[in-house]
Image 1 (cartoon, rainbow, N blue to C red):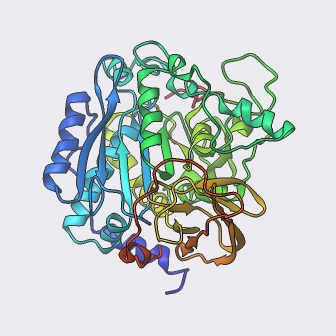
Image 2: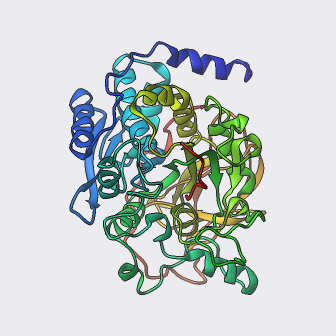
Image 3: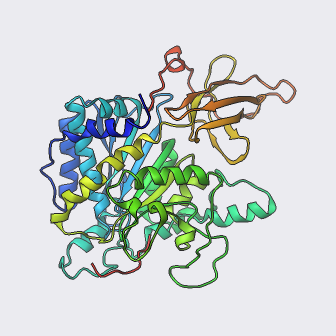
Length: 455
């Protein structure tokens, strides 16, 4: 099919959609009820679980979509959406509830695009990372909500300034030699983070997420790493930078950001919320420098590539606008989710077909690697092109291949590493589970008054 026709076909696959009856602001109890209603309607493809509790004891509920809920299938990528990190930025929370209902409804309607997405992706949706802050914001008069009322958690902490600062280590390593990936956490990190932040970090460690987006409000732009500038020259809460701080995957991040901005109703047109952004995207540090943010932490500590989506000039839009905002974002939310199916993926195994966990996948010319998961499968997002890829692991000889990545879907590249008899095997964790022939043959599927926002 012509690549020019594919966006139009994807639109047609979504156009006949049953309208949701839940366009209202959900308080915590209503949010929980909505999630469990989705599970009750689609029990075979959903699972509800909690990653922890807020300061005030509210569960941080996640709804998972998969053809095998609760199970990681080799070669099936893990994706996450996170909403309502700032309690008073509520549109993302409502959009993720709508998305959950939509995925369930369209799967039941046998929508081919949605069915394929659920069969080939493990999707995790956390509608509210800061339910305590939301309740504070929601208790205010809708016409008189303070710009920062409810932003922080119940301890008064901004959760997007609460992750361990790995950027400082990364910038030091750039000058003195050292990695910019899988940077170890400081010894005392647990004592410095809030319960919600701790829960999300543990969540990131349990699942080998590949792609993510963090939904905010107060502007209309897709923001990509790095958020923190290498040099910060002022002491203000927001440090204006205007100098980009690109990652080694800058071109890829720009493509991911545009995938959202150009399928959003108007984000790519850069409508005015007080700032202008070409193509509706921005490097975070170029906008203003932010320290201890979640999207940089994802990139520097895990295998996950995350962007931040600012979705509305109004942090707490009126209820009457929710349906309009859902229609403006629906296609973009699905399209961005589909971006997880690009680049390369495969299995790293030993000579006995046992998966090797923690194997390093490096791409020549891109100074940022990813690692294989517990079952030996890996995922590396890449733009179309030709690459030299190396897989390596302690106690094994590295293997290097040259592959060409196309635009339609991920290329399947397996590695079988031989034991390094000169060095001998190193003592390490128990080997991953044996890889079945089914896993090896799994198919690849193509694919109000303005005030400065604070991410």
